Amino acid sequence: MKKLIYFLGFIVIFAACEDVIDVNLESGPPQVVVDAWLTNEEKPQEIKLTLSQDYLNSSIAEGIDNAAV
Image 1 (cartoon, rainbow, N blue to C red):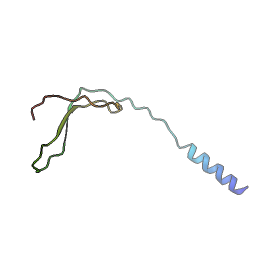
Image 2: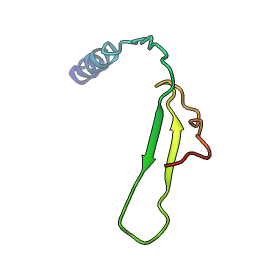
Image 3: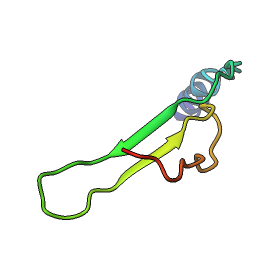
Image 4: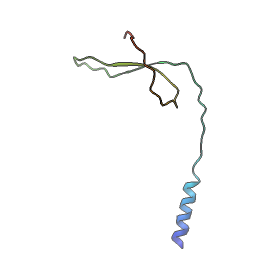
């Protein structure tokens, strides 16, 4: 009986610690994002330029083609 009371108390404590928070983030103008890892090796370096996107947007970022770096 004592174990059952502890178990139920444990469940009530951890079930009550859940709060849903809705964050309304403002959307701003897209910024240029540079993604690169530059080394001193004698091989082609890869630099990716994309446009930033909203924080909660999980789609692939829009790339920038034919940029002069």
